[in-house]
Length: 598
Image 1 (cartoon, helix red, strand yellow):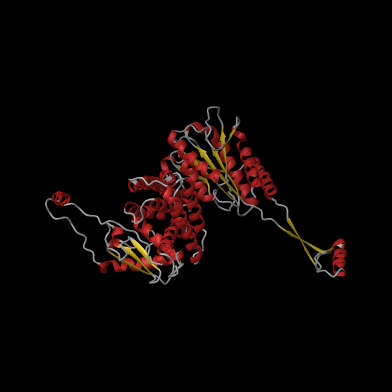
Image 2 (tube, rainbow, N blue to C red):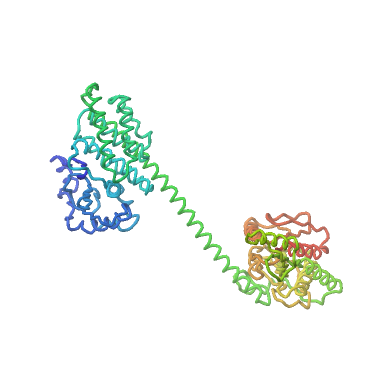
């Protein structure tokens, strides 16, 4: 099989155009590319490396040089095991700018890569050899049918190469149409094979090829076009090595044209009509490819923007975690009030002192401890397994079934012994954080919340050594009333509410990091005692933290004491007309939180 021919007319620049181009550059002569055939050796070698993946063959050589021996943009010589490639397809790129070995570099020169993929399709699938005695006209017809057959076979192996095969059609087909080697009806038939054949293997779309289909039906007639379509469709099913079948289809092609040609009138301007129709097809494919490329670029941009946003979000979350760790360290390690940046703020300390717990508070802590132990208790799990041998409890029905199976000569499958394994379920610890607003409007909450903080901390320490609680009083600054330690507090810390502003966001961060409220494996509860009369920025910061905690599975309870209180979005609101009922409400919420833990 000789190389298939793609004839391309040389591009010449008229003298007047050259003069204008020279003067456009301030009179200097136009720059000429300084590339030699030797400079393209590396490009050809790298194309050869990529050809292995495209064709599945390792015995081929790729030569890339300005111009080709065949005169076509590219050609495959099966007897030589060579693919020759015209370096002009890479214009305006120079050899040092082209690196085909890098996967993805081909996106910079899609037209050249499309031609290369076309030749790879021939290298992989055009492996049949015509006999020496075959008529030259029949062989040429077989090569014509081979164009779409090879591309269709390649598309089955590598469907992602469809875009490049569509691009190669614009580079390879148009020159053959404008400068045909066939005339008259045979020219129209060859255009139908090249364009509509690619349509039928899925490279071009039916809507894109309508102009050629309509013109070929008008010139060839519906009957002849149907016959030719049947022939190239059958050729598409031919095996790669089946030269006899391909030549048979080619002979049928020639016979069909010989029979129909005398009765068909040939338009005088047939070449122009065919060129115009093929030009419409190529314009449609170019527009479709451009739209697909723009859509892909938009999708890539959207994905890149999403990845960037996710990276920024991760960076922001990491920054928040670092800031929360620093805040928790400064709040719980300091002995007084601190600002969010960790600097002491002694003048705004709401703590007024400590006192011994009352008998009622001690009794409440004992009751809460018992309730927490009961809520944390988990029944033992039972796991039953069967086996053909002891140990285990004998099931007589299964034993009789096993004897019957053995007596019948079959492999016994019954397992008559049952063993029950009981395992203790771990008791989940408790994590309770209390954030109490100590601005001037929350004076009524000071005494009951101080009592509740001691009761919860005492009960948690008596229930489970892994349980932790902490209480933070917040206004503009943060003050730790109880700290996340495993020791039960001995005294009740009293405080007053005379502060200004509301820094609930940093208070939640400190409690979250100090107690692990965002981490699973424990009964987790955040109690916020506030009327939520905040500025918009204070509310937004608090709501963001609340949403993060609820998403992580932590229960968030807001206790309010006055009818003028606002509801923080994302929290469970509980209004307490009597401030003295705050300890009982917090104890109930803590018990529910540990009961729901799985």
